[in-house]
Length: 252
Image (cartoon, rainbow, N blue to C red):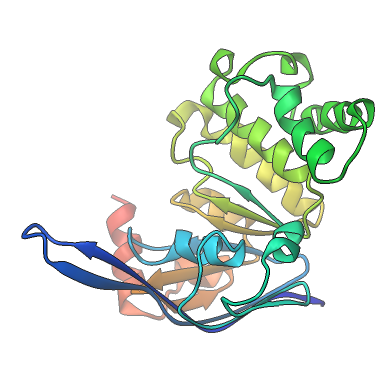
């Protein structure tokens, strides 16, 4: 298997203020080590503030790192070098869709191919139509985001991410902003992509989905990977007491 992403001793801190307005430093990634291989589907699970989303954002170079080393598809990022090559290899699906409200679904998907890949309008729109069909939205191509349900908007954002032809798809809680009845619209698409061989890292609180889609699940806390295992072992035979407590808590 080809290694696509490697994180070596990656650390990241944020500075914020407490209730008394005093500055405090929070370490959100604490010497994180992680390898991702072609075809992997890794689900990142853990409590709020454990570093899950920050991990994805550092891989996509949306956040800088304080120390360590990140390599994405042969491109090394140590916080000092240009980032555009890394961003050409990965694509993000965000919690709240991040669609342009003044563009139709088709225009949102076709924008990247036109601006980044320098495709003609006709080529970009043809690609956009194919991708919208792939996520089951052929009949919604000319609607604006506000005319779509949350599930439909997130499927458009997945199509937009796929338009970049990424080697790795990074999904940051892709169902967290959806009504419960709409969650399956997005998880079904991601499971299809997994079966097709798309390499993905998914931050999720949907445990049944994680069990079904992941090749491995990772439990993060305090910016560290506490446990990493295949889904059956992760959910049915957790080795770490903290993971066992977490799973018992969210199952009630």
